[in-house]
Image (cartoon, rainbow, N blue to C red; front, side, top):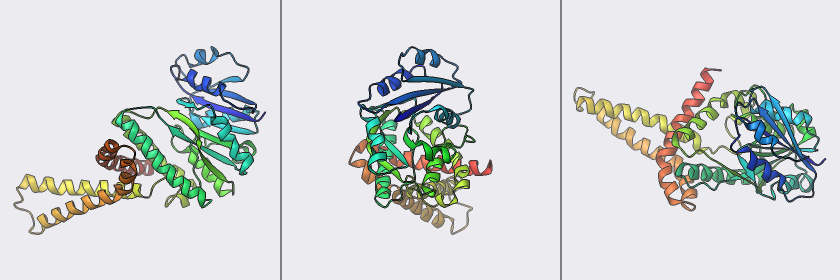
Length: 336
């Protein structure tokens, strides 16, 4: 068999059928199977999967222990030479499988990264998509330099022999929180070639509410120290995370310092404070504005060409994201 497509899923009764049907409709001559690994769902996910009658479809069930373990469970019973991963909220285009497999035969890849698109109209979802596309440009440049090191499991493929030799995903990650780049770091460190194919497209539902968007960013940051503890060289740089994010985090925390100074000034009427206090407050405010602008200039220039409303609204949202992401990093480090 050429390929095995693995879908880890949890409480996905309302969304799993379109995901599977899109895979069954793939325009390919390759032989493949679809393995759905139910991570202890408490809803009707199992019943919805079993309604789909296909010899290509395999259903597995495990206790709720997280997507990393679910993917590994699927990989253990996979018959394909190439194993692919797609999330249970991603609907693949008809050429997805062909495009994901192509780099293995044409370019000798060890792993392949596909691409996100979305049909959503909500502002936060559009911002999330543009942010991902902004990062894709960074990945393309890394690929030109043969230094690509990032594969997200929403649209991923691995040579099964390489995957097995590396032990698959680290099951100590309890949620979708960094176990996928951690595996791709290992691939690169072992000399495996990672290829980004933007033509291998899946349609995804991004968070549409600010609260959910920030919560996701917090937990991704929370598990970064765990990931970096295994790959310390990636703290400074990888092929997906913009360097501007570090400056956004610093700018966000510096802005808190400025807010504290201003509150003290307002509450005291700028009286009974040291003589130099107003000057410090004013200069701190100027520096905070400059840092925020500098940290967002590149993304703003990219976003405004695609969606000017997103570009304008991104200024406060990215500042808030920097604060939340930084807090997640600190909390994750403190929790070990």
